[in-house]
Image (cartoon, rainbow, N blue to C red; front, side):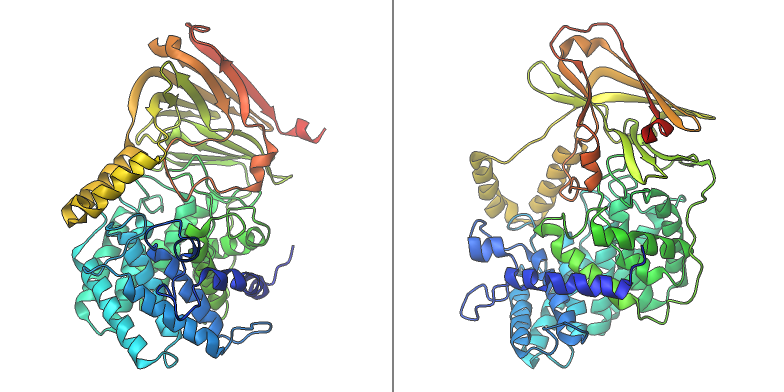
Length: 556
């Protein structure tokens, strides 16, 4: 399919601009005039405005200053007034320390501070000469608060490259807009931190591992920093990142998933459109995934919720802007080799096996998660996210858990993964828990040290916390020319504690708000591959299961 990329991104922006405007409080008499958190200002279902919704101002600013066929927002004086309201509201909800809240009052979120600082700066640069002096001065004062806070604060609850990249980009803008050298020094701090944690395999760290979906997001902010600085070292880092990432574009144009550290499957195109004149891998990713932007093969605008909607809209803006940049010199597209071979990324705990008929992806560090795609038919034909068990007492356990330096052996066409089972929790908020949480955040939690402790605690409980259980999966995978054979052996003293054990196609075991967006290939396979145990005490001896998937037979 031949896709005109400019038309693709323009039409998407035009189709969605009404939704963006509908999220905006456009009533100048309202106390929340300029707010883009519709759940807060219209439905009144929440008790504070999420700062990150203000990122939608960037998309509207672009549509205001950019003339192209069918754009009704170009030069609209009405929109200019609404945009100024958006800038004022962003300043209005800033905390005294210069930071912003995303998940709860008093959060002091680096993500909300960095992302809104970056996108509001981009909107400001687009609207230079169109904003009243009072609005411009207010923006600059707010941005100074953002940059001052980012200069003395860091992400403390985990290493998230995409958050740090946004912080770097926000500080880079602040250093230029405010002519303040110390902000550039802090930009260098965040950038060096990201590059120091970049794996020799090319991936940027996300909670200790590689996550292709999130890497498409973080790549954009780093690519924007490269555009603004022409930093050769940063460009080389991005080129290596694209070389890694191209291996995790699936034949059906989906990306990532449960075999990666954060389970995400969202594709952000801008970084690759921006780098396509400097990286053959980036060009191939950009060209290949345009069809996914159109049909939603990877999670995108058609599937994400409001919490990722505006950041994706903005990403399409930058993808469109990149198409006209001088940096898009002629460079040959560089796809992964079409020949049969195996790519091993031991530091990431990821493996890709390519044969004539199929691509196999294995999450070696995620308990042996398997995704198998038919290359000719371009579809997912088998998925195993592992085993999901219910123990006596109601707790859940699974072998799907991120384990760095997993017990793995590769021997020719054979892959062995030993994966322990862990108990995991799926906590949900209740009215009583919510009340206690709000009382805490509005009292003791208002102190910065306590707020940082709370964030670390939440991440530990929702993402990192694991409790051992006496169960072990040994998974053997054999890759033939047109078939894949999986032999599983489950053993351990706690087999008798299991009330139900299912082998499932799709599930996750950690909290991750940006994962589990719908992708079409979920409909291709049954949720449950096999119910191994359906009552307590049914099995006390080790369990062995064998599955063989013949790709050629699927055509018959």
